[in-house]
Picture 1 (tube, rainbow, N blue to C red):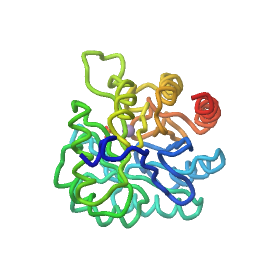
Picture 2: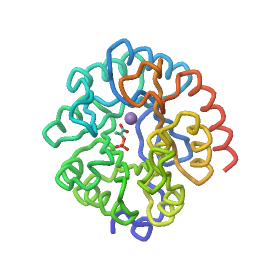
Picture 3: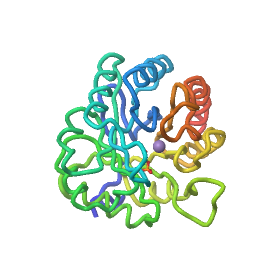
Length: 264
Ligand code: PEP
Ligand code: MN
């Protein structure tokens, strides 16, 4: 298979221009769960730029469990992200949930995110496989590592080799945490595949106080980077505030993570 280490011995390194994913550099993607307003995104972008984060996340299309929850600002949200990226010289990543929105999302975003709920949306996978933008593929919350790699195979076999795998926790019997981070998946993927692997400690734990320790463990286990939810005022966030760090906490954690990365 194209995703396998047998097919390609060397690690895939994705070049984003101002940074790389999967090489020597530690990748930190940070930003809010959802784009809520221009002010919120600009404040976040400025803060992230100041602390040296190069890639900002933010959902414009949110896959929410309840149909009555906030579903994102859609195209307006994409425009806000793109404007912030331009002003603060950042890259942005945002999720596409529907194949009908793919052209629009690809137009505004540097990296396309496929969320956990869509990991086996094979039409969407084949379609992003035709794109020239890097694709971040989150693990389905009940997907095995093999199913996840086969999902990545859909993208690569359609022609797009720039796939990043993101472990975000799986569903287990444990309820203290939002999901259970499968740290061993990081190690397994590094053996099985040449693709870059990152971890989302925010959705994995659902608790901001656990984000620093779990992030450090992920880097120690061999992850190429992290995607962390950061909000200028987590207590006011429209979604996932409970698991979001503020800018200052992110700044402190980034310094700690750089030390761990040097040690591995
Ligand atoms: C997200 O990262 O915005 C998200 C919805 O996470 P997941 O798809 O992992 O649930
Ligand atoms: Mn979220």
